[in-house]
Amino acid sequence: VASSLTKSSYRVVAMGTGVTGYNNLQRIGSIQSDLTFEGFLAVREPLNTGIAQTISRLKSAGIRVIMATDNFAENDKYIAMSVGIIENENQILSGARADTMHEDLLRTNLPLYNMYVGVSKPQLAKIVKMMQDDGERVGLLTGGISGALLLKNANVGFTQSITISPKAKRS
View 1: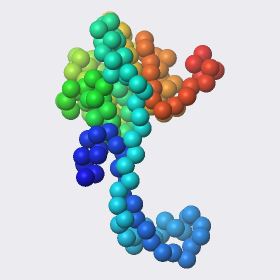
View 2: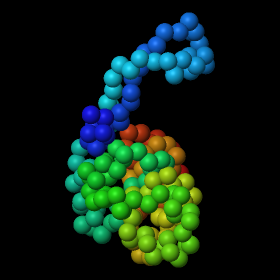
View 3: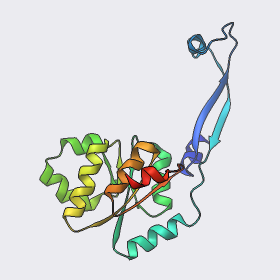
């Protein structure tokens, strides 16, 4: 069940209960090994309406759309697949693998990847710059506040689930 929900872009968390005499959060952590499984909680962050169509239009306009995440979660892969950023797992490059590649090899292989997982902010900025230096117009989908700061490096930047203040947009 959890696996099929993850493939439908849900975040799945196992829920458990336990009894403790503690009432402070630091000590509650000590009972995490003696819990009764209660079930799964599945949460899905809704994508903006029309995101797949927007990505399709960007691609038609010659903009290369890539997705970057701080860490890898299965549901991120399924989100990227559902909106048309990647077609399969072979189009995913990890930050750890990118670190082992010589710069020339990385640049040569960039056309193979549209999703970058576990990449640091400097790695992502370097990847976007390499693409732009090679004549690509880059659309970047990222999440979180730290990822949003990199959007200014892309030709087109968009994010999910955060609001960017006018001041941040100008920086």
